Image (cartoon, rainbow, N blue to C red; front, side, top):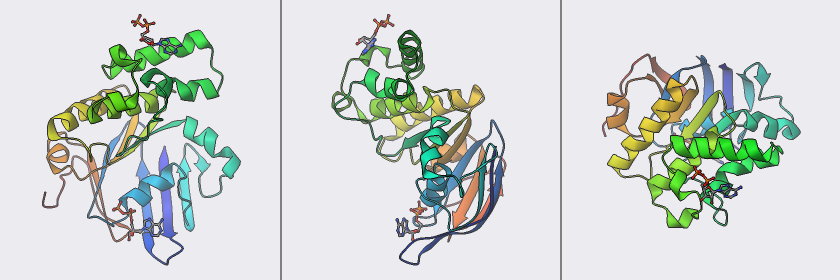
Length: 228
Ligand code: ADP
Ligand code: ADP
């Protein structure tokens, strides 16, 4: 479903954050992206949702080349993938319900179906009872659950996450990981950049290690491979 071919990303300041990335990720995989700070993990993730455009190379997602995709088509691309960030990025003036419903409301989905689907995904993340609350009334872990619910409300085949447990304590991080596991078990591809050694070494999945903008390791059921 995802294929990168000789992807190079050079930022305006001259930094080369991706330096010839070649990778294939199949439907249903769970992939951790690891590596030191500044290695290019975020850039790799950002190119997948067209937050950044590659300078050179091809990025195919379900046959669509993101390197050539018109800006006007980017919203359509993002409707078919979920994105989860370290800092949640919830809309602070909207309730939990409204944050999750938003993506369905913009596509003018049928209101009954919206309500059913929103309550279903809030149920999956265990937050039905907090639907009326504002993000500021929730703990960090709860806010991340809302952002995960938002990411899957459109039933995407792909969810990408950049350090989703980076701001959370260990126990909460495990809870969040269990939700990603559940989503993956239902057939959704997950690509997750993470620094969480414990999690990578316990919930085993494919590990892609990036250093200096290059993939230096790609192992099925790999380990984290760096000191804590
Ligand atoms: P990681 O997520 O592994 O920490 P990043 O992809 O954020 O790595 O960064 C890779 C390199 O690109 C770093 O040297 C970083 O400073 C640089 N970089 C990231 N974003 C930008 C940007 N918008 N402009 C210039 N350089 C950037
Ligand atoms: P359940 O039957 O599962 O308890 P409800 O239909 O009572 O679900 O709704 C639960 C929560 O979802 C309520 O707190 C309500 O605020 C919120 N909610 C439901 N529908 C909407 C809506 N259309 N807009 C905003 N919030 C809603």
